[in-house]
Amino acid sequence: MNSALNAKLFNQLKQQLQNKKVGVKSGLKLICELLNKEVTTYDWVGFYFADFEKQLLHLKAYSGAPTIHTTIPFGKGICGQVALSNATFLVPDVSQQENYIACSATVRSELVVPLFVEGKNIGQIDIDSETPDAFSEADELFLTSICELVALTYGKLLIQL
Image (tube, rainbow, N blue to C red; front, side, top):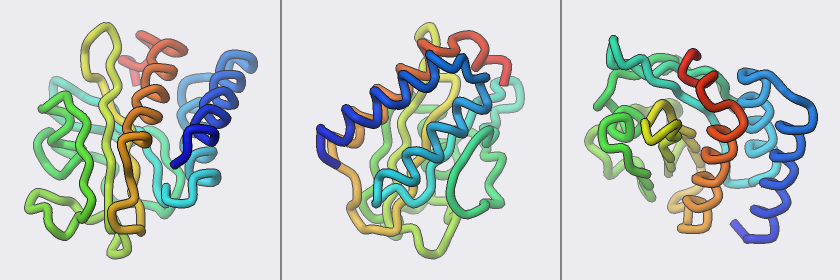
């Protein structure tokens, strides 16, 4: 992914989220749809949020093919591992991951970036690609900035999702 596209998409999202005063779920859906549409290697984009009491992640917004994985236990799959590690997880080849949950037989690589509010990992953005080794450090930085934008725009409202 190139930095010019990153900057364009980031600024477009920032403007849309802040100028329209979009609600939380609508804003998350807008992000998913724009990234899925504009970034050719982002074949599925979703936001999962944590239920700490039940140790589960819940899918709150996505764009791409429907998934049966709307709830994921902490520790299970890439998303579940990020819920515990608090660290970005880049998977160049999902077939090489033992603890991988297949959302689609066509997915070849995945990138999951945690979303922090007040220093607490409350959720994550999950990107699936049908392209092997689709993600770079630029994607990680871009998606981290998207998560920071979401946290700044919605803050504590995200904890209530």
